[in-house]
Length: 562
Ligand code: PEP
Ligand code: MG
Image 1 (cartoon, protein in one colour):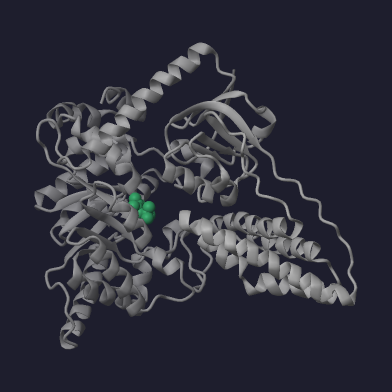
Image 2 (cartoon, helix red, strand yellow):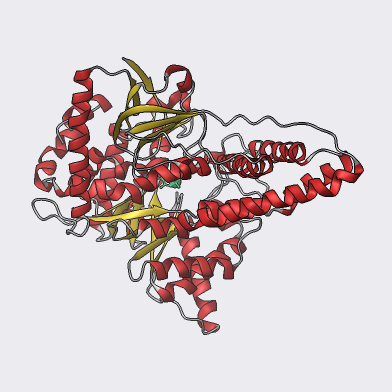
């Protein structure tokens, strides 16, 4: 048996099946030079192939919106002009002109410094191949010989290829290339089947019909497993699917522990699309709307109206559920295309988040006015990031009050009682938690940053990734101190850092008294399932010992049975 570890896993679960290897369809392109008289004929041939590709895509788009994006690419005027110019000016035949233009586009996408855009190279390859097939009269590869449960293994899979598969038989997908934002990942996630992407060299290790097991919980591929291993995994797969069914069933049950302690589960989002997904999960609201994504996807600072539209839509989607909008948190590793950040030795300790907003109040006011206006349409709360001093908080609140004054004068409606909170993500805010708690309506602990600042460990540095551990006693004690300080002043304390979705951590945090757990919405059902099985009192009983532990190892040993 061969074991292969993988790093990019999308949908979770297990799959066992025979390998179905997909090889790229080989197409030879004749590079004939054509004559002036043949130019028009080649243009017609190209236009005819595009038309046929469009007809196919129209049908496919009824099944998956991915193909709507392909329709746009197929009709792209730059692609058309690129091909036609090579036919007219360089006397390429239609096939050669398409191949060259397609490659230029793919290369351009692959060189963009953004994973999402790089993935679009696959769409371009897919679209040009579809047109090429029609030019050459090649029928679609129909994956006809798929007749039993199989795990598809390929260099990369285009949406077209996935759409041709008989999904009744596909139990898992593995590709050598691609990232977690590739379409194949998205499709697998929607279907709930395990999918590993970017598995280097897998095509050299697996042959057609080899039995393989995908363990998407441990992120492993087992090639040629023995009988005993297959049986073991069969049992795990049954247990996993029972658990998933129970999780689904439990969606509408109340968020309470076995001893009736209530907890609140929320989603972290960065866009309206995320909210649409999040509301399908058992969430009580949105505990963190990372508003900076609105700024990052534009080519200008979003106007008050643009922001108002987004926040209003978000509030309406959530009906009356809580929506905590965090004000702009750029800087650090989050940059804007249209704003030049000065070079800094330590960007994470530099000009970021609330520091920028207080330094450039016009930017801040535009956002605050938009949030306030949207607050008339739902249960919106405002949250300030990266606060380190009371002066900063007072200044942020002063600007907020000024915005409220303006809107009142302009007779624009907003929630006069809008709640204002702050993130606790700096050591300074932990030490001053009690003072801050007198000034805000809620805290949300940002463990992603809090961990890096307390431990002085860069959260994005792979080399020291093992040092970055929120179970470090210093971080746990800081979290506990924050919860106690908040409660002493009667305010709610939530957490929107990743730690809230760690199942063991969630139980520990519940015992510490945390009121709200906010996380990527896909994790909510799992955490709810775990917390509903937990006894609040039992965790409380062990809390002192955990908080007195002096090393990560000691902490982990103490909570091993949680
Ligand atoms: C955090 O720091 O924990 C947090 C939630 O904010 P972000 O990850 O956006 O910095
Ligand atoms: Mg943060």
